[in-house]
Amino acid sequence: MPSVTVYGTGWCPDVRLARRTLDEAGISYDYIDIDADGDAENRVLRWNAGRRRVPTIVVQSSEGQQVLSNPPREELAALVNSLGNGEKAAVK
Image 1 (cartoon, helix red, strand yellow):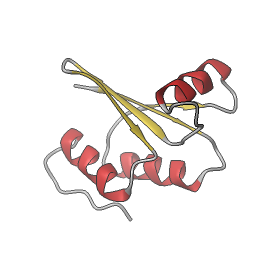
Image 2: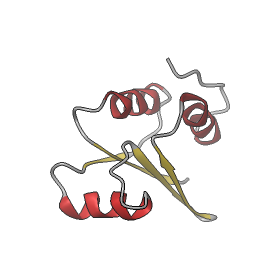
Image 3: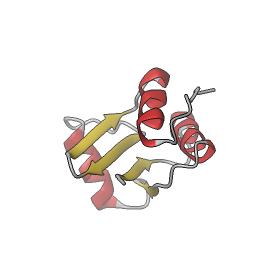
Image 4: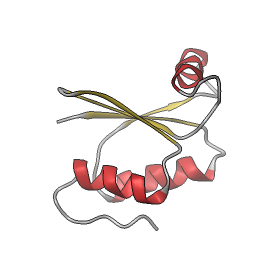
């Protein structure tokens, strides 16, 4: 099973949406607040060409690492569908 990490901030509505979507789909993930973790913030900046884009969602699997930076709803739904139990997800 792939591991999922969500890098975000507590104040960002897009982060709250991504976390709620993953929670409702029953997908476990680690959450790291980049406002409280400077090393995590530096990773987000590196993945996003110096931009502080949240949520940055990292999926680590045997096939490699996938980094999604502030994914649109359709991309978030596709991620949930690929990680979930086969039921189609809708991002509300």
